[in-house]
Image (cartoon, rainbow, N blue to C red; front, top):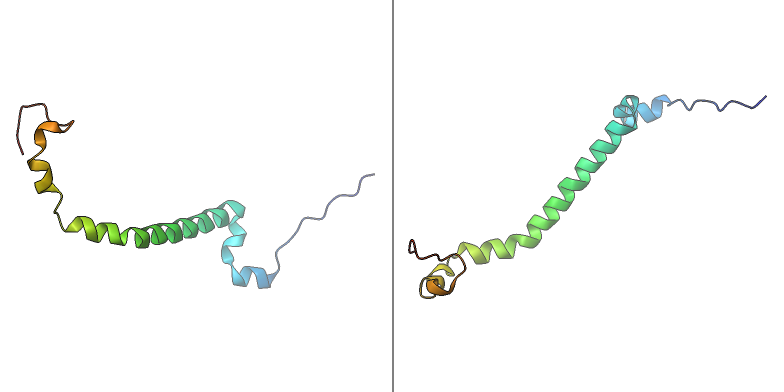
Length: 80
């Protein structure tokens, strides 16, 4: 007869540290993925802060006005 594997039970110390372990691996993995995505979004937001600052000045639009006839979006029906 093949020996049956013993089901791993969680001890009280593990459950006290993380009560979501009772709900299964999917919930724990979802929470970890959510924390990772929050962290990555925060890092990308910090990296984009100089671009937000640069584009908040709004100085690019007047240069387009003098060259509006050469843009791809100009069909001649309206002007800026």
